[in-house]
Each structure stands twice: as structure tokens, then as C-alpha cells.
Image (cartoon, rainbow, N blue to C red; front, side):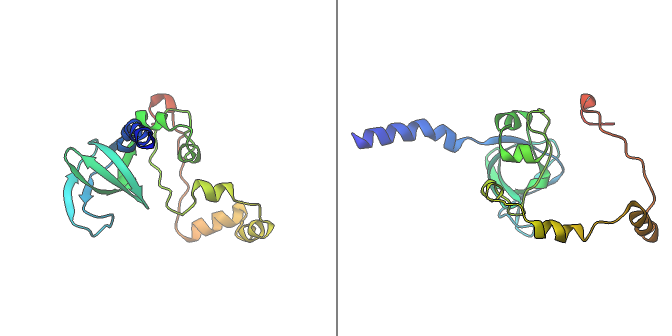
Length: 166
């Protein structure tokens, strides 16, 4: 009887285990044998190409492209709107600032701050004080920029109704 319930549960869960997340390649890159920049290239990836995300390891996605699988950097992969809306409640969507907007952005979270780390985070007065030592005035920032040869630029705000372009 236990084996029957286990088999039934496995059959029902199998589609969830095998489910791949649809995505697109955001810039030309290479599909690699391992999740390393110097790993052997399996196939080229073209901007706009459809792929399926199989899993994530660090800053790399294991992708399936047709019958070929390999690794690509997360920054070269954009989750599709369908995939993003399916997980709109996830921490990753919330952290990207795009939860429930339906817009997809390419983000990478590689600093080791997982959901559990954030849940366990506590306020630290000493950490705030340490960060405050780097605060500068507007005048100091302007002097720094001028010394570095930087020039002021006006950056237009994004127009979400036009697909994010100004």
C-alpha cells in the first residue's frame, strides 16, 4: 500500500520536477559544457533565441536549447513574461523591484543572500555607523567627479508604457 501511494505521488510530482522555465537569450553568448567562462563551448547562443532554464548554479543557468544542454551566464538570459508571472511572488521578483508589474528585468543575485539569509537578518547599529562613514555631501561628490574628469549628464526617466524606453 505504501509503495502505491509513493508511486502515485511520484507520478503526480514528475511534471513539476521536469518543468523547465522558458527564457530568451538577451545577448549573443556561448552555451558551455560547464559553468565556467573558460569551459568548452557547446553551441553559440543568439540574442532573442528561446531556451529553457533547467537549474541555476551561482551566476550560471543550465539551459536546454533544442536537444542540447549547457551553461550560460545569468546576465545573458532573460526570463520570459510567462515565467516571471508564474513566480511573481518570489523573493527574486520582489528584490528586482518588478514584482506584479509583469515586466521582466535581467538581474543576478550571486552575493549569497538567499531567502533564509534575509529572513534571519537583524538590524545592526554598528553596520549602519560603518556605512555612514562613506557618506559625502553633494559638494564633495561634485568635486570628486570633477577631479575624475566626469561630466554631468541628464538621464531621462523610463516610460513603462513604451516598453521601458524613454
